[in-house]
Image 1 (spheres, rainbow, N blue to C red):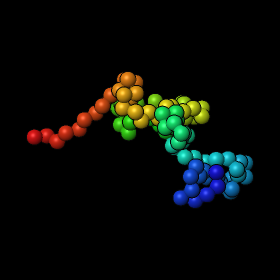
Image 2: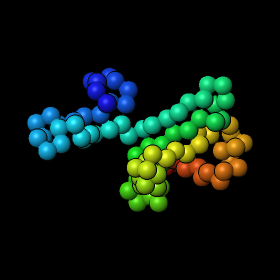
Image 3: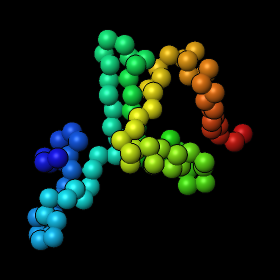
Image 4: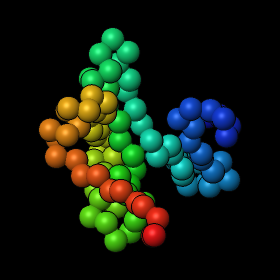
Length: 95
């Protein structure tokens, strides 16, 4: 967990806290396992969810899984993405 702002998977502790000086106070929000031999076997998880919109049902759908150390598949093949039932949001300017 040690490192600086440019270190992967850096965490932060508070050594001034006499009760728990080594407890992790902050942690990376994105975790990923990349399989370079088979990209479709790669996994990832983000601490909250897939949406930055608090009104979306996907705003915090990864939170429990992230806290438990879980992952989700990192699909990159378009046919597998479509088969998974993913939805698409298209934003277009008003005319």
